[in-house]
Image (cartoon, rainbow, N blue to C red; front, side, top):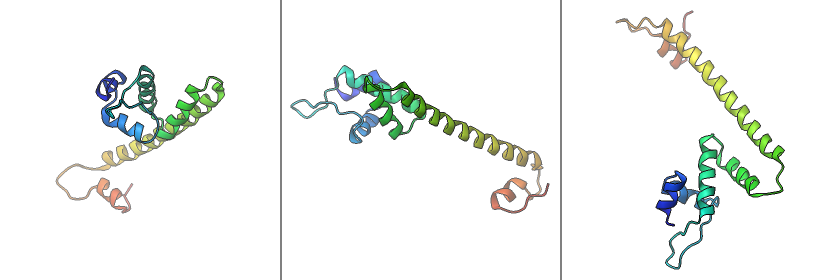
Length: 132
């Protein structure tokens, strides 16, 4: 099947598929005319990569996950360790976003939002001391 059909079945745009091929995540065979000829296994691999990326795994994590998925002698502990590491990164991002939200919420509450020019939001962004 061609790249358009493979993309439709895997839920990925052709541009993403070309990128995955460029970095060696997928290697569909080529017809004699030079066009990619995707097989069912390629589509399955592309869908796997799409789901892994949707979970926020990096390209290198995806490369590792793909390698583990294709290895029948893999240890599930290796997969779990990678997923736990990623989960810790997500938790750290969530904590950072919660801190950011709390700070911005406080600044919004302190801003009068009236006709006066003083604004604690702008003062904070500028690095000026914001009165408490």
